[in-house]
Amino acid sequence: MTGVEFRILGSLEVVSGGDPLPLGGPQQRALLALLVLHANEPVNRDRLIDEIWGDSPPRTAPISLNGYVSKLRKVLSNGSGAVVETRPAGYALVVEPEQLDVNQFERLVAKAREARTNGRPEDAHTMLTAALELWRGPPLGDLTFAPFAQAEIARLEERRLVALEERIDADLALGRHDDLVGELETLVDRHPLRERLRAQLMLALYRSGRQAEALHVFRETREALIENLGIEPGVPLQHLERGILNHDPSLEPPPGPERTDRTRDSRRQRLILTVALLTTLLIAGSVTAAVWSHSRSSQSASAMPPHSLVEIDPRTDALTRIPMDWTPSALGLDANTVWAIDRDSQILAGVDLRTNRPQLVGLGVTPTSVSVGKDGAVWLLSSEQGVVLQIEPQTGTRRSKNHLPLVPASSTSAGDPTGIAAGAHAIWVEDGSALTRIDPATHRVRRRLVLGGEITGIAVGLGSVWMTRGTPATLLRIDPRTMEITRIPIAQRRGPTQPFPIGLAIGSDAVWVLNGNTGTVTRIDPRLDAVATTGPRVSLNATRIAAGAGAVWVADAAGNAVLRVDPATNRVVRAIPVGGTPKALVLDKSRVWVAVDST
Image (tube, rainbow, N blue to C red; front, side, top):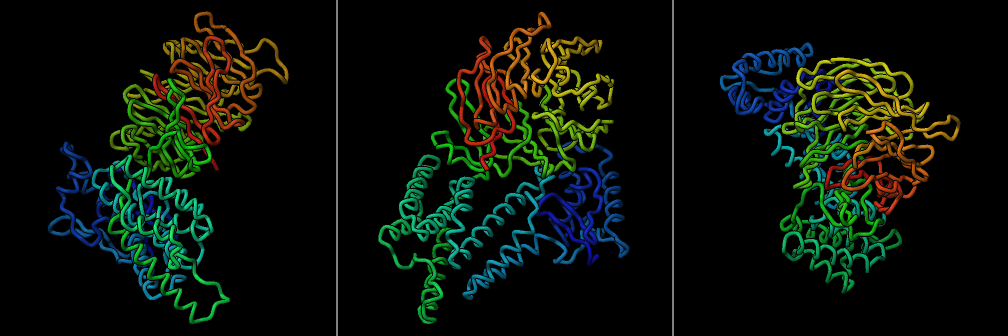
């Protein structure tokens, strides 16, 4: 098994000869994760059952556990015998330390600390960089909801952040303060109550000749700590502020090559001792915060992080933001959670609106769209793999997986041409030219309706399923009981200037269609099955639409804003800047959420 590597610094993976091994379903993966977390230690069978199935395991749990162990042995044997051993107290995964990526990470960090202690910051930087490159994403990213993984995930996240801070210390010791400012500003925005990062940003700014900005960071830190925790900054930060005010020579950057060796060595040792003392004090007295933070819109748009979720208060148009590591491509919403998908990382993130903390679920497929059902279940569509997933919101486990004969979506639409909509009694999927109905109870496909043309949007509401078609511009109304179709023309004339629908929303007793090429919004009267009005152009690059909270909301990529449209007049009454390009939009009766990319 020397060629096999177990990875938990990201989604759970086992790699042999560079190729990932098949690890089975969620419960088998949970078993492997438990054994990896207790590598070379026996784990009691009863504990395994409790951790995998919870408080109410099925009567067949012991038999299922035996089956999972047997399957793992076959997968992991690789011709060298079983690595999951049966012990009197349970089962144990027998591995060499170097086969675990977390052990590789810890070893590199330890060597980096030794190098820094011995005055070799360049070596420390190299080893810490290598350690951080082992990370592929959030630790155990596909088991975030598993209770047994919570403590280890939190510990690993903290270890990763500490290693990142130590790499920054090494860079400061090497005089790379100019290059660090941007990175530190982003990190401080994500971890606003972490004093060590604040101190590093202050030092980098001061060394870059930006004393006033360094002192401003201290004032911001003090305000944040008092507002959120009711405490003053720690002694190290206060000493650093006084050092900046007094131009303490120990805070100066490393000397350049033109200095003599004696001066260089002396200053280098003093710098190393200063950074080491500051680091030690900060580790002892630092206050850590959640990975995602909550701050108010009094900050300017330029202060927005590269990626964020922004909440708009419909009553005041005030903004609240949650910094993120990536920009969601689609959003879903239930009573307490915003659900966001990341196509590139194949991740579903559930952001708890009460705590603003994320829970990440590894999907194993590329998600296209997300919708939340009445029961809170989360439904995901992967048009590339032709898969529909149902996710249990409390545990993050997968309830079902349906394979559908989806047609590749067209790339001509500026919106999202492939979607999923969860109704009260059915899940509806459109994939470009057809509509599929899935029974949420049995997870079976009940009916598939071929519509023809290019379908560009789907929504459920007002007792019907609604879909838009691009050419000719048409709104389709489908009776969910009989599957009877009513076609509502959006434009009477065809031609190069006719509207091309790219978005669909239901609210204020109407159906709203966003037309991408003309930048207009069309209101459909569901009582008459006819166009009520099409307003004037609202944007040069409108990409998303939602309705509710007393208005119609349009994502304006050209103006980096969300437009508030009066449903009575169909005209824009306010443009709300969001500090970046709005990528996704979702709302309920009292909240508007938009995913923003500020890069």
